[in-house]
Length: 412
Image 1: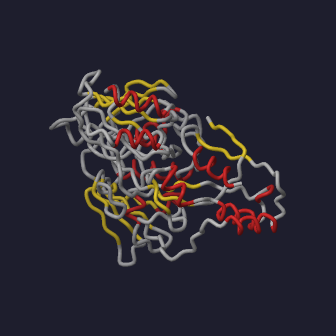
Image 2: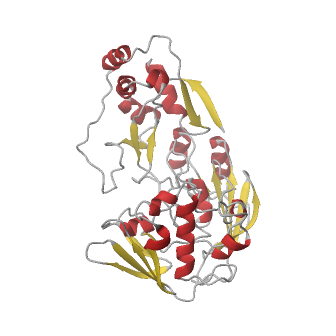
Image 3: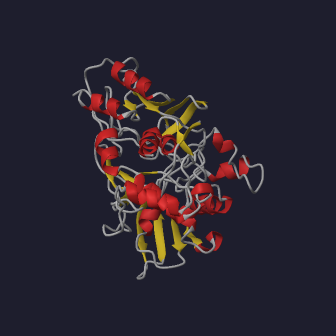
């Protein structure tokens, strides 16, 4: 659900400094910076609040989630939180790094001299939770489907291929090659992407398809069949999804692991904080900056605080009063960057340099950076013909984004 309020929009870029993942253990745990939608942070054990459930069950409170378990379309972090425990990719990012990868379904990989051909060697003997073997043909079927359906995540791998059906080559049952359209030295990071890389049992595409434009998509709105450690036990769309251990998981279950994971949709930040403090949940997506500050001051909890790849920004509509570039430039000069970061967000965000996060290879410290200049903004609005009294609409996700709009509104 979205709410509206009158304000003008801007293209200010702010870099999130706190989020990631960790290995939670028994006790209440807090994650994420205030004001960041769907950004989990490191988890840590705590001992003060008693657990109000079986300690072998992990309970996570998110702001919202959509019932979509199709890697071809799922594109929200709250969704990824669910299906990344069900699906696996060939390789994945290592720890909290944005540039190092490690094996997952592929044990090893290599590329030719100019990095235009990448070959992945699969771990033998892996099966999906429905018993279907994982082989190179299954991997190709997944990525050809994801790219062909064009449901949102197709460009992640598809951008590097001219024709997925021809350029993804099954060499043998455990070997698959990607013949790229151009040399791509960092294609391993593409294959390790959080979205669009999860591998579903190809049996789903045949047994649960309503046609070539579906290929199991409708079925995957409420079901999931992967190679990962967990499976869906039950689903209440928009409310709760329960995951349980996959008894045939190829890595086995030696050591200490959660037997069940419950992801609950709790829209109100204050309620998530209360559940956390009461010991009813282990991990909670952040609410307000005040909530994060209060939780962070309690030694029983840990709030994530390290830079990642998330960007917080407001998209400008290139139409109506903002159709002219001068009007959009005015919005950037109008926004009070330092005051917003230090006062409203209490240091949970850091000013970004350009449109690429600092940790990306494409980042450039030397790009142009707007400063707050109200007189310049006035001049640009006048030049763009935006008359006093003009009203625009600022749209934001419930629970995230309102603060920036209110601050911008006050600048007028």
